[in-house]
Image (cartoon, rainbow, N blue to C red):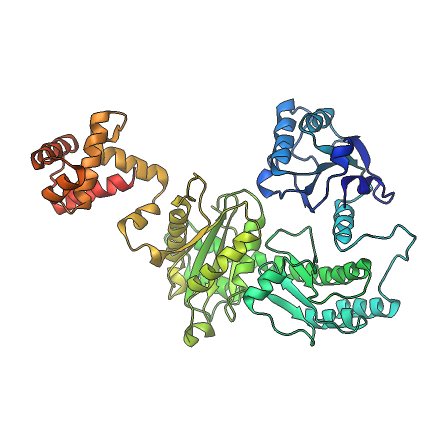
Length: 518
């Protein structure tokens, strides 16, 4: 589907504000709706960007529009569809910015929903829609009536899916989560392994059930075998599944209130929450009898709302373990926390929570590859009273995870760190906040912390090699191609400048930690 195809659809009633032939013939690969000032990290090349322009204000300067459009160009977006509702029109400065960066811009009238645009694009991805007049519905009337009744009765997704595709000859069909969990499948569909299901999510025969959901929360309708049916019919089946999912999300939202109460108690500034209150909160979340408990904290390197979805999706891969998930009162933007109960799974043994989630992490991260997803996991808390300490552990492990950088960049490397992974001095120090590490290094090294001085850099290198070789004068001299007497002189200078005695083990450890904290 091309950008110009959207302009031909009377049902959308879009208006072209700027765009020449090269821009209007660009191929659309997908749709992203955003109101972030800098949405670049969330976009994929070839996407259409929908924005209600909430990020812009009449008093905003031209630079703000310039930054927004520059981010679209850098990400490879094909066009911007700007909503008229927020400001009663599209700001001229935004149109001019699109002109400068070669991004087509179309206005979306108040009576056209962003969902209508999204549906149109994703329908076209299934095939070229006919422009001939068509009935409002492609599903047979009796099928639609039955599915409506099943929805009203709260039928499970397996039943809905089986009835929805039954009139197509009962082909194999699946409903898969973003990471490939099988949410539903028809009787003719064989079970999928975790790896096969994760691949199926991105297959050409897979349709997103709710494109407006976050990348981690989406459901997908997957038909492994081609079927001779209009794309409109498959879209209507997906919409039925979307209605079921929305009802489930409403129930989850109600439960989130109870989850928030539990997390607030654990995050209380006092040393421990009142045992009775903590017990009631665990019971309300269905976790009263599921000890021991593990706490996990996850941070996305962007201030969006997808982190709770990401953590919730990950925890659904832990069978027989209940959990409460949400945001702590003291959480940073983009941070989510969960309390996980072991329950019957603890007695059965098998993989630990950390092992299961670490194996899943690459798949979870791939669903939004531009945003590093970091996490920290505590050791099990054997009693409810130990949950405060477990939260402290999880946050410490998260800080350690954030300190690891991707090779060749300053960006954090997506990873999940368990507190039990911190088995070295380097790993332990990684969990200390960066400003505390820096302060310790400066005070422990004294004048040597000023590495702009060539003499100090030389002494720091000698100290590092000396400690690496366990205080061996001869091996240090050999590694640095120096005479042993020169090494003795340099180490004496280090001792004088730092006030440390490198014959003492504790002073060696102090300086080793200081070097690691630089």
